[in-house]
Each structure stands twice: as structure tokens, then as C-alpha cells.
Length: 120
Length: 110
Image (cartoon, rainbow over all chains, first blue to last red; front, side):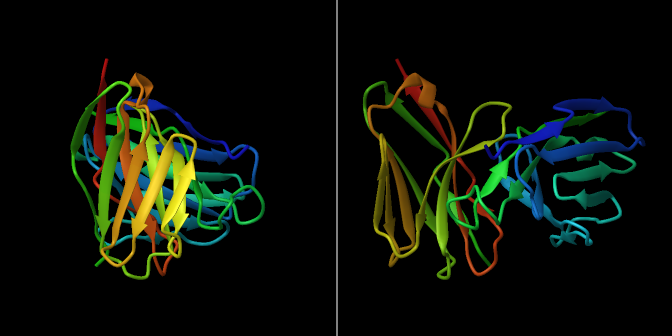
């Protein structure tokens, strides 16, 4: 149980295009999903918190018009990197929180395998 | 603000114990976590400890928490080559957000 998937696992795009990354909770309902960014050999930086049916909450310094987040259902959140540029190249990881049953503690987050974005 | 720090690198011989250390600043931390990340992959939760505990053991893993010094450690007994990875400590405080350390790269030598 508690599996989170991401699609695609990697993507290469041209500068100026938009890229959508999906995060799905496969066997539980995730009222809250998180999006992180990880640079090579660095830690995970929280970008935004996404609650089903409401607007995402962005961390300081993260451009909400650049990184569009939609959490339309209890099992799917999407991150769209708009007008991507080479500096957006990174490893994007989502996580999901299950308030109801699977987690031993209410704070536990289940992580997806990540999506590597390369912008040429 | 909240800050979590770890040493960057640890090298051990196979079969020895590994100890990875972490310090944090948020005195209101409720849960502290250890995650493992293998190359090109997401994070796997290894274990966690509630802030009112001093120690937690789970098979080869032992977590020690010194709340006074805000120091957390992860001991891996009988370290194997498959334990080579990056280990992140993380904490949640008054909010539900996970604050991660910089990660410790563990290299296990045969």
C-alpha cells in the first residue's frame, strides 16, 4: 500500500515549451500533495502544498505563474512548468499525505519516484 | 527559521556500523524522520521518531534523539553494500511541512 507514482519519469524539452508532470496516489486518497525540487547533490526544497479542490500554497520565492499546480481529485495532482528554461532543469518529486488509514502517523508523506526534467 | 544540518559524506566498511548525524533548530519539532534515496529515485521512509522519545530501534536501525541538544542520529548495524545511498533527516514542527537536511552520502566499501 501507499504507492505514489509520477509520470513521466524523465522528460527533455525545448526552451519555451511547457511540461506537465503528474503525481498519483495509487491505493489511497491524498487530501494533500506536496511538490519538491531537488538540484544535483542537494536537498529537497518544498515548492508548494496542494490540497484537493483548492488553490496551492506556494513557498516563498516560488513563482506560482511559472509552476502551475492543480489538484483536481483525491488521487491526482499535476505540476506544469510553463515556458521552461534551462534553469528549470531539475529533479521534481511529489509526495502525498494520507490522513485516513495507511500512515502510522498523520504527518507521514509517501514519495513518488521523481521526474527528471531537462530543458535544452 | 527552521534549519536541518547533516554531514555530507560517510564511508564505512561492509559489516561495520554506520552512524549518521543530524542537527535541527526547530524546538517545536514533533516528528523526526530518516529517509533513504538511491540514485535517480524518490525517497523511502526508513524510520521516524516522535519528539517525546529518546530512542527507537527497528531491526538494523537505531534512532537516537537528544532533544536538549536538538541532535538526531541514525545507526545502521552490519552495514551492507545495498545500504549505499543518500540519507536525509527531516523534521516537522508546528506545521506539517517536512524540512529536510542536506543529505549524507553513505558509501559502503566491500
